[in-house]
Length: 263
Length: 263
Image (cartoon, rainbow over all chains, first blue to last red; front, side):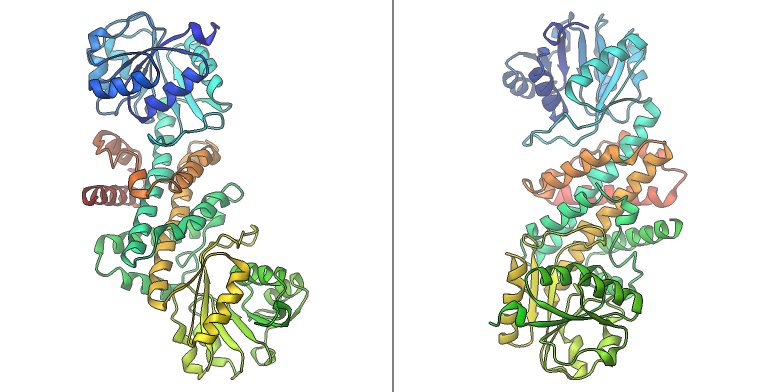
């Protein structure tokens, strides 16, 4: 394959994924030649960060790139692709949910997916090297190319079909987005007691660390798995002013018990 | 205060909390003089581990200990206390939910609570030094004693009333037990696809690490907080064979959006 510096990449999108992925690729020597975002401000921020050109006009996107990396909200992606022009380069999106064939309606000849399984926030640097990256492309040669590119970032690159990637993304929503929301609920409960929410941090870290060693089903603790109805009743009583949290408590506890019975 | 070695402790209970707390106290030099459990096997396992006496008969419990540490299921604790005999020592339980006055009905004169905020599994050693420990006692002198003991284990010892401890425990159920269950759901989704569940580990670790830096409300990502209805519909469609998970998905997503609107 060509050297990274010879591979010209356009970032289509300037959000968290584009920012982290673009920076990581640039660090590995790839040429990020342009950033597009539909708002000039966002395009400018990432363009300046990567010291490269930027635009908020689709028609001004460079037509000679080797790789167009689309990191956009799933609801926006099809519409942007709709407005895209024919290019020789490889069109790749980073969505966990959308199929690769979202590019087909544009009559694109070469397309694929590169999905890094991680949660990206503006203010945190992410270690790409241990992070699983899932790829697919509509022809074997481009799949090889994508694999080579992904392997410069991560040592765990897996070829995965769109259908299975969608399931993977669903699992990630439970393990990451929903988990974070439970942290937020816990924080809210403590803050109502004027307790600093960060007393939970050692518990949160240990809960996450534990599953490096034990399967989550084996790691389960707490009143629901012990069928400790007294504790559960007492918690439900505490939540009686907040029917939404109460229902969530009930439902997750039941789900824990169902899992336990199926082990 | 007396030196740790002069403080004689009886462990009432031989489960995960008793095992970890007992081992940690012994490492700090305290004298664990006996282990009680209602099954001889459990008493024996922990007794042997700590190289100390053990019994499964309440009446055989040593009456001269300075501290009786009750680490039992909340539903069992009152019943065991009921059968307990009057002692001069300090009676302390480690429950997050039960009030300190559970000891009063036994006419106990000196009692309190020592609640370590952590999840304990048989097979993992826990670092006590950074783990918050919450204490209370029914008289100031014993509260000072408990604080001194707790400070040998941890540098974060907080005096907390039973009412507030109960809220803390409820928060811990969300942040730990419920979180772990979400990991288990995610694992199940992947295993149905013949994908190794541990591809989620970097994501799980980053989700937990992120809140060391950002408040969970700021750290929230995913389709619900982005109001990405296409992705949510696609996930709900994937879960259509599993109405329980589908309902959980819907409910947590709604809860994320409610939080977002209240920020």
